[in-house]
Amino acid sequence: MSYIQQMIAVRSRHPRAGLIYVNCENSNFVNYSGNTKNCYLLVGSEYDEDCYYGYFLYNSEDCVDCDYCFYCRLCYDCVDCHECYQCQGCQDCKSSRDLKYCFDMVGSNDCFGCVGLRRSEYYIFNEKFTKEEYEAKLPELEKMPREEIETKMEQLKVQMPRLFWRGDQNEKVFGDYIYNCKNSYYCYDVKKLQDCAYMNNCEEITDSMECSNNYYKSELNYEVMSAMNITNCNYCYGVFDSYDLEYCENVYNSHHCFGCFSLNRAEYCIFNEQYKEEEYHQKVAEIKAEMRKTGEYGKHLPTTYSELAIPGLS
Image 1: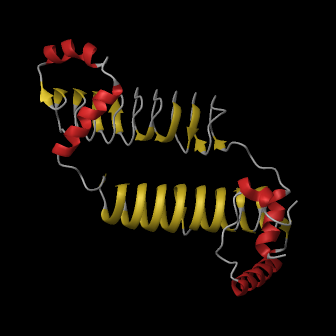
Image 2: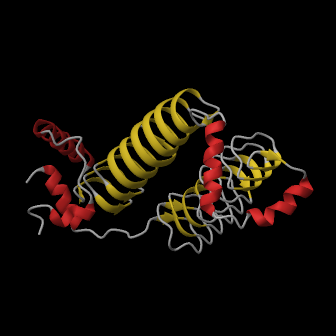
Image 3: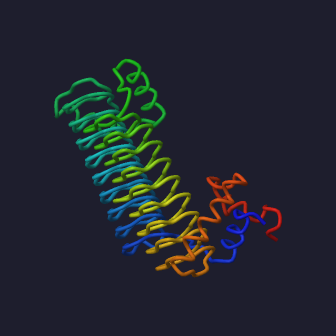
């Protein structure tokens, strides 16, 4: 049996958490989220209150059906919006309020079906109106079929200049939806990265590569997914507040573990078995040398959803 197969066998013997969240209040059905209050069906979200049905939603309140939104309040059906208030059906809007079905708006308010405007108010499909005219027309506009609104907006999108990427306050970066980053390349939907490459959905990470959904003061990691506050971890999934892990899943508050699963406050463990510190380092070196010879090292474990189909694991 190869070492990868041994890890799969160890993993299959331990319970798996159905939902993973930390420091949440009255938010029993959120996943990979933390510090939420009165939230329901959020994924990968942090510091939210009274929010429902969202993904990558941060520091927001009273938002529903929103994805990739930050510091928003009373928003519905919005995507990639920052610091927006009482907006509906909007995308790529920033520092705005009372927008309905708008795209790429900044510093604007009271607009309907608009595209690419800056510091504007009382516009309907990019046409200027007075405050009184706008408020008089709004009730009828809200009755328009969504398909008709989107058709008009698509026509405006063709006419208006389009940003080739989204981001600000960056230095030497390449990617999209990238903010407050430095020396980071091929990164998408990220904030506060430095010296990173091939990352997505990450925040406050340094010196890491090929990671997804990693957050908060993590560094020196490679091919890690769904993690928080980790250092020097490789080929891991769902690890929190730990360091020096390899091939670990659902491991918390631990360090120096190899091929371990569903552990908390563990150290110097291999395949969930305890070793002395000196034995651990020697054994891990031997395992990694053998895995490199067979070409196993660097390959990920298969997903648990297909585990029952793996030969020899009945």
